[in-house]
Length: 468
Ligand SMILES: [Zn+2]
View 1 (cartoon, helix red, strand yellow):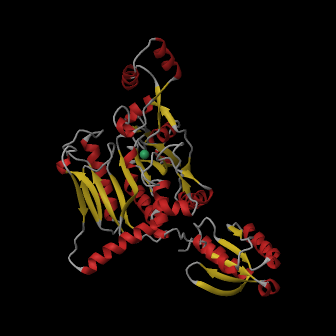
View 2: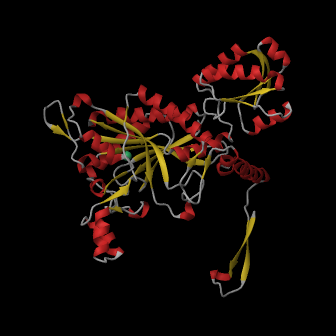
View 3: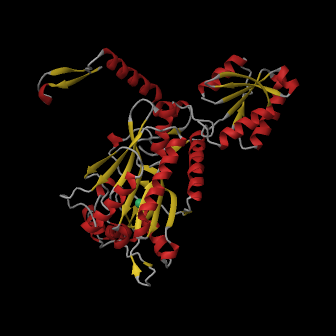
């Protein structure tokens, strides 16, 4: 498969050897499948396609693992966000916005700080703390220790949206009648990844989660988790990802890295197990894979070439509400602690978009495509008709361009295909006279001549129904 060089026994003083990598299979057919999959993976690589199709850029000066969404990529993301927002509205979520940083005390309370420091950006000290330490000629170790033990105040780039949402919930008094409260945000978070682990959109240092937190009574947990699972299923089926399995991640009873009481963990794990059993999907239980504050359900999706991707997560959490002293008034007029559910169907917009680029090989379904239609006048003579058709489509919100170049029609079609544009409308002399368009599809070739009105009716229906 490949070769590399290495030192004998890993010792650079010893001789240099050639290492040969090979793969063995039981049959010639299995080997061929494997080789085809490798070839297919190379063809679909989102880093290459992302560049070719102008979707995103990573710039050394901005920083590794920080995605710059270019206009076309931003259109894909916007379509995804609109889709999820519509579903959230139907399910009774409320949208919120929160800042990108929060005080260290917030994360001391949540348990994110000073634990898990290795996966976060270092704390940002208050300006006056830095100035004071500079006056005292203090060492860097002084600062780090002082931030960790709370002597100095500072901020963290948020590694999670949960604490901010918790504080929104806590800013009002709640009765059991108002629950569940469902707060959703496309919230950007920052994690420290080793630079060697970064690559494309799938391993990044800043990313936006399609995040939400639900606050409910213990009786509502099962129904709310089921609602979250339904949402993940809806998202996956809309995108044609129908092959997935579900993983129930539980705590490792031997470990002490978890916050909260064993009783609460037992309750949370039981609630998730109950919900996952109603899914009718194959699932596995894995010990030690839970988050430090609660167990979770993950969807593991198989893409078109058989690779596994971990996506949508649903977590039940009895612990953070206790740590933050959350409460609501129950039917008995006494104070109770709500249960919290964390969930993100896509996981992160970056990773999910990377997956979609590979899954569709850049050929997004029309509702997601950054450019849905390209109008190709055969010559200057029909440019005016092309512009008129473009105005009508743009008025209806269809994303399109007109190819105004002097290229021959064959080249115009080839370019549109390379850009993975779903529909090409060719307008020649005859079409101009008849008020029609000659429709081509990037995969289905020639769809024949249609009136512009018929084409508009078809494509708006296809977009509205989010057809595949
Ligand atoms: Zn959360």
